[in-house]
Image (cartoon, rainbow, N blue to C red; front, side, top):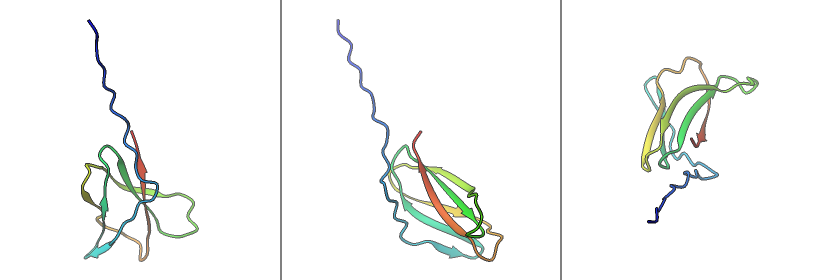
Length: 88
């Protein structure tokens, strides 16, 4: 007989991620972001524009809904953030 195979395509994140409302809540700084199922979202920071390395804070896996990713205890008086998307 014949055998049918289905190969699930890899998720493709959007080329531009729009994070509408970053929020400070006490000592926590958080982002609400729309996600794509199967895409990992890595929150990274650096404390100064001249820093050459982004440091990871947290990683979450997308499930297709809007999720919260946060820096629970930023230690610098100012901090720059980015969210990097990565497919498995």
